[in-house]
Length: 389
Image (cartoon, rainbow, N blue to C red; front, top):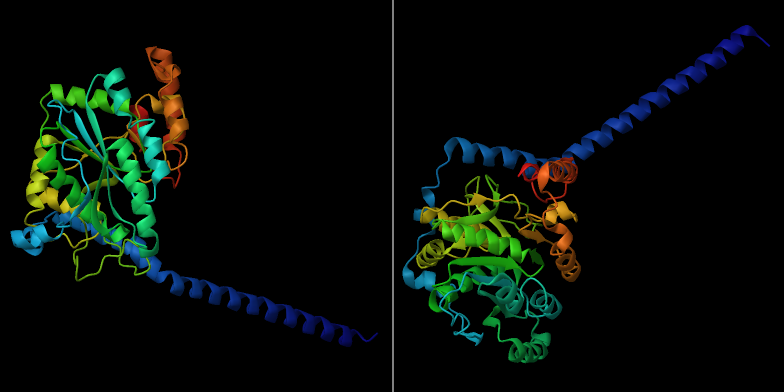
C-alpha cells in the first residue's frame, strides 16, 4: 500500500481525535459554567449572606434599630396574641414551689408524641417522686389548619384533656407561620398563671429532655441565685434566608438587615424567672408579625438587655449520638418523634451513672465523645467542645 496514503489516513484519524478531545473540553466547560450559573443563587444565599451576616455581627455589632423598627403601641402588640382559649387550666401551678414550667409546643394531631412524653421525661409523678421537685408540663397548641379534620380532632383533644388536664389551646391556626403566636401564648400564660415558677422552658414535641440532668442543673443554678439566664443551643450571626422556596424565607420588608440578633434554637431552651417576666414585658410593645419564633425571642431579649448563653449539651437541630458517655451529661436532643421510650430507658439506666468517673473512665468517655462529636460531619448535634466538658 502507498506510504503517502497511510500517512494521510493517520493524519485524518489524529485530526478526528483532536476534534473529539476539543469537543469534550467544550462540553465540560459548558457544564461547569451552567452549574455555576444555576448554583449562583444558592452560593449567594449560603456563602455571601453568611459573610455579610458575620461581618455585621462581629464588626458593627449594633442592633439599635430594633427598638425603633419593631416598637408598636401596646394595643397593637397585645392584639397579636389575642385569641380566645378553647382549652385552659389556670390552676396547673397551684403548688407554691414550682422549679420548672415546661411548655411543649405541639400540634393538635400529635396525640402519640404527647403520650410518649407523659410516660417518659414529662411524667410529673416520676419527677416528683424520684427527683423531689415540682415540674409542670403544659402542651400548647392552636387548632388544626384543615377545616375538614378540625371538628373530629377537636373532639379527640377534649377527650385527651379530660384524662390529663395538661392542654392549653387558643383559637389560631396551628401552622409554622404561627409559631410566634405560640411564643406569645407561653409567656403571657406563664405571667398570668405561673409567674412564681423559678424557670421556664420551651420545647418542641419531638425533643428528648434528660430530666434528671436538667433538674440537677436547675437546682444548682437556683441555689446560686442565678438571674438573667437564657440558656440553650445558641445561633450567633445567623443571616436571614432570602430564598422564597424556604419555609424560613424572610422578606426584606419584614427584616431588612444582614444578621439576626443572637438567639437559641427554638427546639429547647430555658430562661430564669426574671427573664420570663422581661420577655413578657417585651411582647407588650413589639411587632410580633415576624413568624420565626426563635428569632423573635432574640429580638425580645435584646430589647430588654438579655443575652443567650451556650450550653454544649442542649442540641440544635440534630439528634445527639446514642452512647452512655453522651447520656451522662445530656440535657436535650432534637428529632425524636418515634424513639422517646427507647431513649428514656437507655439514657436513665444505671450503667450511665458514673461512667466517666475516675481517670480511666474520664479518658474513655473523652475519647468516645471526640470520635462522636469532633469528626467532620454535617449532622447538627452537640459541638466538639462537649467532648471536653
